[in-house]
Length: 150
Image (cartoon, rainbow, N blue to C red; front, side, top):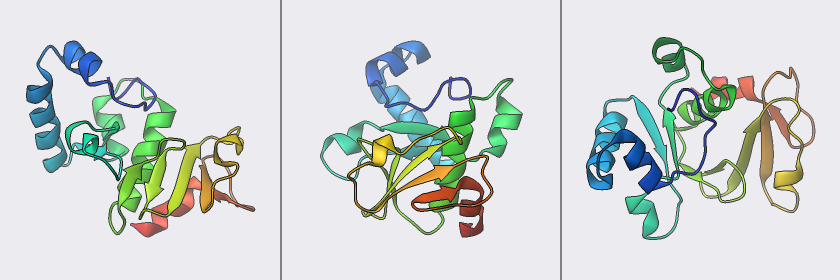
């Protein structure tokens, strides 16, 4: 499921139903897979709900898509790459309007070169991390540059 779907906000009842187990069991499985470096779980930075429900579940490393997936969703690969690079030295949380909130101050929206800036209009410290471009401009950063963070 993580291979073929675009990253989305987790619905715990749908996710546990598709896995065929209760939410409490699935929650433990997800925790074990995160500890085993198979998954990255991205949660909100605030609220009690963040302890119980992950907002996004991504494969830990974009290389896992080549091993585990017959056909990978490019959006999932991009977001997996971004989180895997940032988590080495930064806190990464879910952002309600964009993809990620880094260190509780920088907002990132990840996408392809056709992604426009509509989602970040009016947000302070918000940037687009765009795939398939060579150089950045204004608040647009090429996605590949985040590889230097690792």
